[in-house]
Image (cartoon, rainbow, N blue to C red; front, top):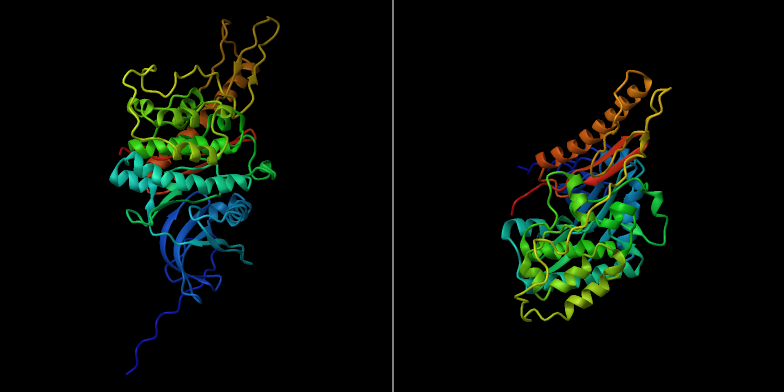
Length: 416
C-alpha cells in the first residue's frame, strides 16, 4: 500500500489575480498565506522552494499593473537595497517576470504592525515608546543619508518585531511612495498628485508638493504622539478636513504631553514651516536620546487649548484645478465671477447680478458639475476606507478630472 502523492503546487499564470495557497511564483516562491493588500500590491507569506526560507512576498496587483506600478516597484527595491540597517526591512529578491508579473521577496518579521499594537494594547509609556522609536529613527537617518525620503510613514508601515522581548524593535516597511532626493521625482508622480495617507501628510507637501527629510520628521512626530496617546493627532470625518488640519497646525496633543519633557521636541518636529523643524531623522533621534523623562512638568503652561500651537487661518488651497472663469453675457458689464475647485472647500460664483439664461450660465452649470463629481469621488474614497478597514494600507484612489488627479489614502476612523 502506497501513500497518496501530494497535490503538486499550481503555477502562477494569471496576471494580477489573487494567488491561491500552494501557487508557485517564478518557480521559486510557494504561497502559504495572505498577509494584506493595498492599492498597488498584495503581500503573501511564502516559502523559497529551494532554500526553504520564509519570506514576505509582495506581488504587484492587477490595479498596480494598470496604474504603472512597475516603476514604483523598482524604486522601492532600489531604495531598500541602498540601506543596510536592522530597523529597515531587508529584501532578498526582486524580479520582473517575463509574463509581466513583478514581486519583491522581503524579510519575514515576527509580530504585528504598530497600528495593531495601539488598537489592541492602547498607548505606550514614554520609555517604551522612545526605546522603539529612537533606533527606528537611526534607520530612517540612514535612508536620509542615502538621499531617500520615505513620504508615507504611518503605524501600519511600522512593524513591532519580536514584541515584548529583549530583541524587540520597530522596523520601517513599504518604501513604495518614497522619493530619491537626487533623482527625478516628477517621473513617477505628477506635481498635481498627493500620494500618501491624509492623517500623516506634511503641510508643505499638501501646499507646495515639497519633499525633504523634514517631511519624514513631521510624520515621525505624529507617530510619537500616537504611541503616547493611542489616537491620531489628526482625525477627521473627511480627507479634506484632515488636510485642512495639517495646514492650519491644528494637531490635537494633550496638555500633559505639551507641558512635559517631550513638549519642546514635538513642537520643533511638528512645526508648520519645515525650515523650523529638525532637518532630518538624525537630529530628531539625537534630541530624543538626551531627554530627561523625569524632568518636572510645567504646571502653568503658557499655551492653552488642545493644540500644540494656535491654529492659523488657512487660505484656500488650489490643487485640483485652476479657477474656471465665467464671462457674463453681453452687453451689460458685470464683475467676473469665479468657480473654484479647492482641496479644502468649494467657492461658488458670487455676483449681485440676476442670473440669466444663456451659454455663460450653462458653463457655470458645467463647472458646478465638475465640482460635484470631484467631491463625490473623494467622498467615495472615504466610504470605501470605512467599509474596508481591514486593508492595512487603506484605500488609494486616483481622481481624474480635466487632466488633474489626487492620489490619497484615507485611513479608517477607528476608535482606540
